[in-house]
Length: 295
Image (tube, rainbow, N blue to C red; front, side, top):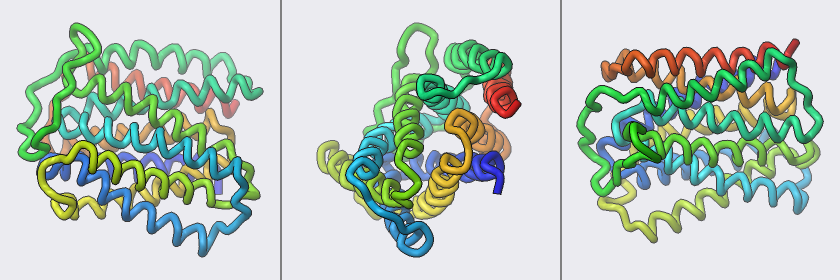
């Protein structure tokens, strides 16, 4: 199957997963939501690798997987905190654009040569980040749950709630994206197993350290998020070994479009005019990068 189609399917699954996670984080602390999702994801990945993607787990492949876990945990926790703040149309798009930028740089350093059109897309992503982050927002729905979730005050003047979390999530996801693409195909899916197991251990440590209100079973409804994240992660992993990193990443980074679509349709969230322009520009930027790279 074409790597672009696989990456697009991954984007759909990630987008829906984030929406479900955001909803669950309004009735349970985001740490419990993320931990339950990670348990489902870890078990699912192990089963997938044993049944469909066996290989040779080399030390370097395992190391890349463990590095990806650090990014995965940082990205997931920051994104869930941003979504729990009630601004899905801020945290999601920001994390996607920031998360796509670093892998493009890594690809160029590694020998990839994006076309002029791709560079136009990269340049378009910068004002997109500013418009989405600094455009202000309507009042978000009350966060019924998430007790103890500290709302992000922002990186600077004018940055809306959820903006800082979106940027930090993007940095984490960039590490995740790059780390999964680096291991040799002969390692099979073992880098993914190393990633998810390490991520689970880290999340358990985070839960023990933060001691969030409530208990693990409060996030039990997040198993749906875990299943969707499993599908998305496996598809992305397959896509990175079927196509070029910069192309696959930018297509996968379209996932906030589906989160925003669901937020508008189901929750009636209303992004401001500036943010709408930013969202459109962000979508255009990843399309330009993908089309230019393919050409």
